[in-house]
Structures are given as C-alpha cells and as structure tokens.
Image 1: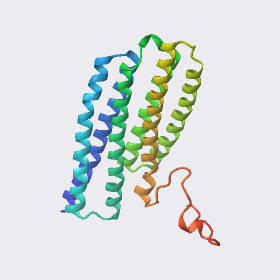
Image 2: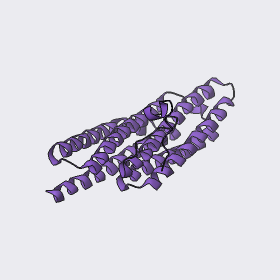
Image 3: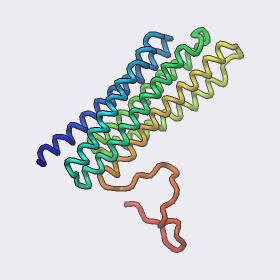
Image 4: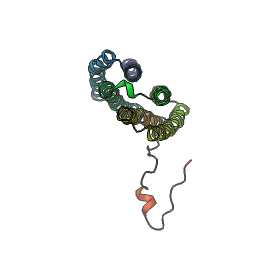
Length: 235
C-alpha cells in the first residue's frame, strides 16, 4: 500500500512539472507572437489554454484522490497543499499568456519601439526562468531554488521599471503611444508570471520544514501583536 502511495506522489510531482512546461511554453509563444505581430501564433496560444485548464483539472482531481484514498501523513499533506497552490498558480499564468496573446491584435505594429521589444524579450526569459525555478523548488524540495526564484523576480520587477521609463519617453505619435501602452501591459503580465514563481519558491520552507509561509510585508502574527510578548526569533 505504501509503495502505491509513493508512486502516486511521484506521479503528481511529474505531472506538476509537465504542467509547468506546458504553461511556460504558452508564455514563450505568446511573447513571440507579440514580438512578431503574428496573429495566427497568438490564436494558437488562445486555443492552447484549453489544454492548460484540462491539465489543471486532472491534477486537482489527483490531489483529491490521494487525500481521500491514501491518508497521507503530515509531510505528504504539505506537498499536496503546496502542490494545489502551484496548480492554481500555473493555471493563472496560462491566463496571463492568453492576455499577452490578445494584445497582438490590439495595436498597430508600425508603432513598435525596438528598445522596448528587446526589453520585453529579456523580461520574458527571466520571468519564465523564475517560475520554472519556483516549480522545480517544490518538485525537488529545494529551498535554494526557491530563493533563486525570489532573486529572479526582483530582477523582473526592475526590468518593469525600466520598461515604464522607456514607454514614458516614447515620441508623441498616436501609433507609438498606443503600442507602448500595450507593451506596458505585456510587461506587467510578465512581472505577474515572475511573482507567481516567487510565491511558489517561498513555500518550499513550509514544504520541507513546516515553517509557515509569509509574504513580503505580511502582517505580524497574533503572538507578535500581544503587548509584552516578544516576537519569535527566526531560526
């Protein structure tokens, strides 16, 4: 029975990595379609979102089946809990890929700015790497990869700031202004891809050690808010 359970857990890990590969390929194709103003490629990204949703539903069902039928111990429950969060995050990233693809037909390519295009290509590569690191950190139970995802997400955030500066400097031409505004949306979507990777990477400590997950700037715990009770020291 335990051997079957471990086989189910390993199957789930593999399925999570496969879903990540599928979703990240969607992001890469969407950015390529935007960069090349390829309407047909953008359409294929939108059609491909159905496969992402189906994979999400399959993994969701697999998690439920393992929890109901196999009675996992606390350590494995943590994996399933974090895994479900990862599945939802990947589905969300799939939606971001669709949103980028939809921008292809929203503007005229004559307004494209080469410097902004180049920066978006770099952002895409970094954002994809960030999310891949976050998912691999969970699959391998590797906190170092989780920390790498956090570092990469900060780089993407800095790139977005650069993108905003470039967009603000675009000449006052209707086509260029319209295109740069759309490019800013694409950049924001890519930052959100990276943010999902950072959040997943940040949950590895909980997965490995049971340490509660805290977002940056999270509110203090109940114990920390009590008068006269010193905050807990991190180990």
